[in-house]
Image 1 (cartoon, rainbow, N blue to C red):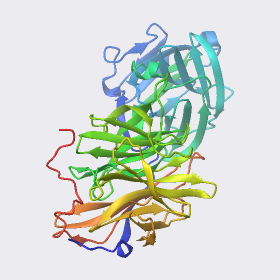
Image 2 (cartoon, rainbow, N blue to C red):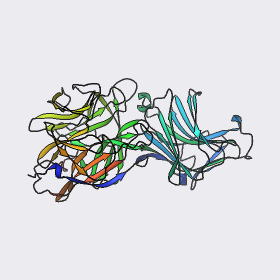
Image 3 (cartoon, rainbow, N blue to C red):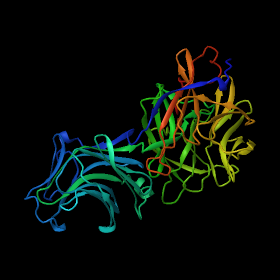
Image 4 (cartoon, one colour):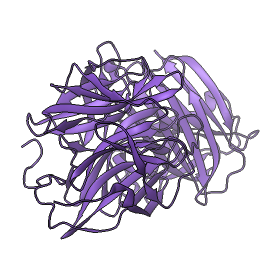
Length: 508
């Protein structure tokens, strides 16, 4: 057996990164090298706009440039790029734009949303959004001016949430324009859309005579958004991290203007982050829900994945869903229901753990009071409940609690205040001390996500947290910070249950 004092752990910063629309999972792209109408779906084939491939994708209109730029003189053509995911981005480079509109079209059976970069004789470039339903214009938004942009420049359109769009224009690796838009009468999470896989992205151009638009790097991807927060390492019922083929799996809230629950993975050094999957939740009704900040546990006893999201954007309570399917990859939609627990109407940050000595499920969570969030420890005989309070703190304000074994003892780690991570006894919730680490985030209410990390005959403890820097304002944080503690000899750890048995495949 190994005795380790958690107050003596010294965490050293290993990685600090901001994943701003940079970690993504490709859904589809246009390969300009082999473009032809035989290989790509194309709309408006009879229009006067030609589409050609090669080094780039070029939309061109014959005729004399500068001819009357009226609605009747405009002709357009589109090519198909990809179907969509619940939270995605569209990327392309603009290499030449001599006039008319470059269009990204979000197409649905009863609606299309046309996001246009418009260039006319009176305006160097501006952004407009038009929503068409049943071939009628329902809404037209003059988003803003782009100004003079040197070619090439890059465009990223982020579809975040049920009705939100963000658009970023960058040149030379620097963002020069940012726009945010809420769309009236739109719900991208409608079951009618998602259950029929009906969403599509098309790229095109609407051009007057003589105009040319040349594009490169056209792609649609599941997106990491502009920040990631609320980390929870995926774990089994004993709190052991799920590590497979040298990769650690973590649930995080992907943030844009709105949020979605996502699953990422990274290597044992905290690098090579990959976006693995996204989750939506079904409560009945006509739309799915983008609940977030979920704890995700694989219970070896019944071979189910359990997900405990928080309904921040609805009634701010704790929910539960389960499935035998591996939800780490792609898009997963789970039936959920309210957890059976003593709810307050403002609860969050649940973490599920099975206490073998007590033969009970235990879970810390944060419960709102008039003075801030108290930390409560729940107990249940069954995962779905009913859960009852075992103990609670008399003080506030806590965030992101987890249960973790350090050596042979079990503790609760929680955030409290600016850059402060407290160590509490389990199950009494009495303060033992604070974690020591360098590389502070200078942010309030961040989470100390601690887990053991195998390193051959040695091991250390890793820690993951985030900051609250919000580039789009509101809840659009954060950057991620990865730490490692000093090394320990693992010779006495074989029976301590700190690591999952890797010989047992999940869901098999």
